[in-house]
Length: 414
Image 1 (cartoon, rainbow, N blue to C red):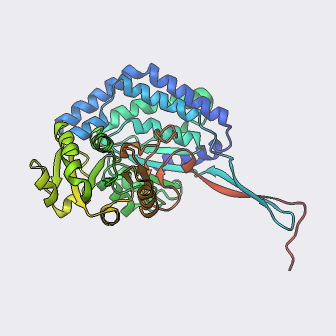
Image 2 (image 1 turned 180 degrees about the vertical axis):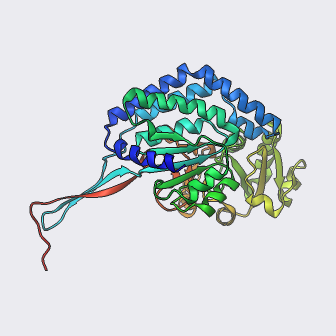
Image 3 (image 1 turned 135 degrees about the vertical axis):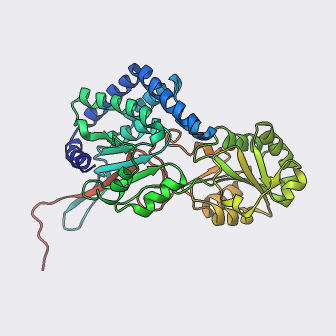
């Protein structure tokens, strides 16, 4: 692990001085390698899938792990989208001139060396590495044991891209073991080499990283996302958005876990929304009011309001008004993503103003909480903290800044 760290630091120094064209060339070559290496990647994924099924992993975990030709192509296309983004390095974020003639610029620079710890999804290997290369950062990848073969095959394609473009091969490295001790060492003993750690995975992983890390962390603990159906909601839109927010992919952090329904519209809205969810195979857990309207709903417990199911299960509560909905979200939410469905512009603005989650939506599914959907090409994760990055962490969010000051011989007076 120390050898990985030393090599990453050296590579980061070199990578920070490369041009945007060089970094883009590496990503283009990596995208080509992903396409040409698709057969090997899918064969590696078959090994991971077989082992995961033998271990009894659930459906949402298997979906995260699974790769097919379409998903490999999506990875390659994602790299090409990242190529098309502006260069995040060297951007002048702000500039001004002082009365003494000094010209000051705040300029974007790479963070340095980024450690990324992730579970299940092998596509994160490509997304994370590409975003780091684009932003001039070296990266140490530590994928989950369940995706080890898939991630390794993808990593080899990334190395091919770096070599083809003449960039430092060690700019992207992968921890070559599934031993959990490697994670502990990365978190606690590599502060000399690693500038920031980004975890992407389940609650237990995120908590471990936050508890053990001796370097800064960009991450989120849970994705307890809400959809609030306001009294002014279009009923058909409410049904369609809730169904998509919950059931499009139940195992992602942007999946809705709780629906709040305005009391004034509950009798009309709940049968429409509830029937659609039940027909799609979703289990509903509701409060007493919900259960009087939807006989199929199970009784919700206090624990349900703070549970990230990552499965075809949703909790529904009837609330008195928008203030009660906001109060519920503030109490139980994880600061990830919330959506209000309404045709009342005033209500939407109140929701935007008073909900302080990383992403707040009006008349749209929570499953748009995604760097690709935000036009970032990809993301390393959704940050729910308030320090440095918040929301989708893309290439721009993987930079810090320095001050560049130009003078003409100025000296500071006594």
